[in-house]
Every structure is written in structure tokens, then in C-alpha cells.
Image 1 (tube, one colour):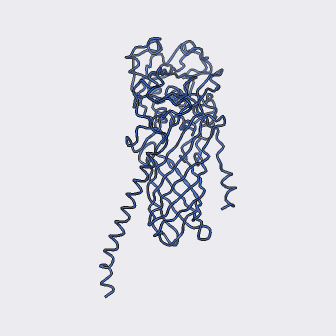
Image 2 (cartoon, helix red, strand yellow):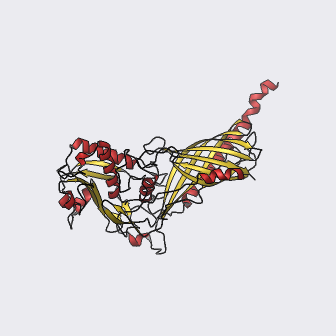
Amino acid sequence: MIRYLPVLLAILPVSASAFTISGSGNSDLRGWAADPVSFKLNPAGCSIDQATLEQAIRDALSLWNGVPTSRLSVEYGGTTTVSLAQASADSVSDEVVAQGPYIFCSTNFTADSGGAPADSVPGVGTFSSPAGQIVHGYLILNSTSGGAANIAELSTTTLSIIMAHELGHVLGLGHTSDTTALMYYDASARTKLSLSQDDMDGISYLYPRSEPSGAFGCGTLAAVGAAGKQWSDRNSGPRNPPSTGSGGAAAVSFFVMLAILFLATSILKRSAKRTLPNRLSPIGQ
Amino acid sequence: MTVIVGLSVLPFSSTASASPFFSMGLGVIFDQMGRSANKNTGEKGLLGTIHPALTVNLEWESLKPGIAYTLLGKTGPDGSYKRRMLVLSVPYLFSLGERTFLKVGASYLLTFFSGASGDVTLNNGEGTAVFSRPGQSSVARNLAVDLGISMPIIDQTIALDLDFHCVAPASSRRSLSTLVQLAYQF
């Protein structure tokens, strides 16, 4: 087998993946508790027609819905009249929070986004997580007249890419150093709407899938590290029970499955032994 | 789709073993084949994410349960997080000929994510911004249906196994992982 080692070593992965969580000091962030997360669009002020924008939203949401290792479910919830001013207010109302997250267009993008240049940034995404879990968020698309990064200047594919990137921020992801990732800060080279392994790892970290559903908790994050704080100490919002992170329940499931298969095999073999002489006897005689 | 390909050292016999015995080997997991972009244009690669793995198998009766674990895991260049995989599989063996088996069964794929915590400064539009490295551990669990083949390749003690693990075959989250392993029988 030694002769195969060079081959195996040659294909050792050289990873460039390094997803992050949006914002500083958010290492312990959990994603949205809502399931599914339903995005609402306020089409006011948008520099492209609503149908095109909605198609881009659906394409982008579909991308995030397709990660095999993630339980995340996102959907387009239709239009709303909630405004950016209402959603970004210092004391945003519970009603506005409950209806979100939101997608807005801004004709004064630099001011509304907190200083992002309208000539180079087509969109921004943000969220708030007062208790370590995302409860409110929105993204703003650049519809500034004359702005070089106005979404009206983008192809439909690029619009979907920008939409998916900003949705990633609202879902909790930050930028990454992986240049192949959707969450890389510069999308100018990107021509395909797709996720890299880094993107999928990031969303799976925040929203891990747990199958069979409900049998082993709901696949949420487990606290680790020197702090050793209990989950309940940090969580005041609604959430699913944490997983152990050890895979112990998975092992139990595995051995149960194994036992069932052994049992089935034994039954089949015993059945074959009983019936075989009867079938052979006419020939033997 | 997720496909796991493994190369392991496996026991060989014209029929499945009546008494249990072990085999160990080295394998490679090609995870989520054809799903992830590997270029900055967003074009997808065929092989997916590649994980070297250690494998342990037990052959007993017509079953050959096995474990594949990516001991080294994958780590980002700045050590921000580590990704490991554990694949538990239980295939049923159908003899195709001398020492060659078709494997049909189920598996449980666990993907572990563990973060290094702390902050990191990255490009953000025209300037830079501070982002957070993941600070917790997380486990994604997927059931899969398996199809594979086991065949001898060297003497009587080393076998090549090729296993395809299909996750969520009827949904948009469908993925294929392949495990190729070369295993030695003890």
C-alpha cells in the first residue's frame, strides 16, 4: 500500500476557505430562528422592473435553499409597504421586526447604506442580533440615479449574484478570503450564480442539517471553548435544542440501523435454509 | 449531490464472510461532487471537496459496515475553522463473482465544523471591515442511500472499494459524495 501514499498525498486538499460571521464580536452568533425565513420586497424606488427583481430574488433564495448539509429554508414572501426608514429606525417596532427580513431599493444609496460608494457597491446587507440570534435584517439595493453600480446597470445574472451575496449577509455570513466564494467581497469576475464549498460550510455552520428530522434535536449550534458557558445562559430568544456536537446520537443511530440489518439478514438466511431442501428434493429423487 | 470515494484494504472471498473480520485502509472522500464553485468566475468543479480519510471496515455475513473519518480535516489558511467528516455506512453485499461484490445500503454522513473564534479584518467594498471567525462547533447530519462495488486488486489481502453516497436524492439539496478506499485485511 506504500506505493499509493504519494498519490493520496498529492490530492491532499489545499483549502482557501475561511468563511466569517458578519460583524465583529459575533463568533457565537446563531442564525435566524424563523423557519422558513421569509423575505419581503418593498419595490418603491427600484430602478428595474419588479418582475425582474423578483426573479433575481427567487434565483438567489433557491441557491441558498439547495445546500445539502444545511437546514436553512428561505422563501420570497411577496411585497410590503414597510419602508427602509421604518426598518432602520433606532427603535424599530415589533410589528416591523415580525414581518421581516426586507429587501429595499435606495435612490440615495450612499447615505442609506452608511457611506458605501454608489459607483462601486451595488448592495449592502445587515442584521441585528441582540441576544446572539438574528431577529431583524434587511438588504439595500443601489438605485441611485447616475451611480455606476446602480442595479439597473447589471445583467440579470449579476443581479442574482449580488442579491445572493447580500442575502448571505442578512442570513449571518460575513466576507471570506476565498476568492471562489460568493461571499468574497469582489464579485466583478463572477459570471455564474453558484456557491463555493466555503459558502456552503458557512451556511451549514449557522444552520446545520439534522437527519432524520427531529430524532436527534434540531441541529443547532453547541457552545464550545474555554468560556464553557451553558447555552441557556446566553439564549433568551426562541430556539431549537442544541446538538451535542459529538456525533454520539449518530453513532447510536448507526448501530441501531446495523442491528436491524443483521436481524433482517439472519431471518432471510434462515428462511432460505428451510425452503431449500423442499425445492431440491424433486430433483434429488 | 454528495459522493464519497474510498480506497480500502478489504477481505476477499468468493462469498461474504461467515465469521467477522476487520480491514483498515486509506481513502479519499469527494464530497458534494459537482456542486461547489472552484473558480472565481463561479464555475463548478467536478470533484467537489476532497478529504483524505482513514477507513475501518467489518465484514460479517453479507454485511460490511464501515467507518471513514477525515482525521486531518480541512483548515482555512488563517486557521479560522476546521471541517471534518465521518461516514458511517452499512452496505449489504451481493456477490458478482470471485471476491467481487455489489454493495447496496445506507449511510450516515456527519460533517463537523469547529471555529477558532476571534475577529479578522477583510476587504469590504472600498475599504476594510472587521468580521468574526466562527466560535462554536456545529454538526450537519445527512442520511444517504449507497451504491458501491468492492473488488480485489492486490493479492488476496487488499481490496478497492468505490462507494457512492447520495444525499436527499429526491430534493433540490441532492448531492453525491464518493468514497474510494484501498483497505488491508487483518
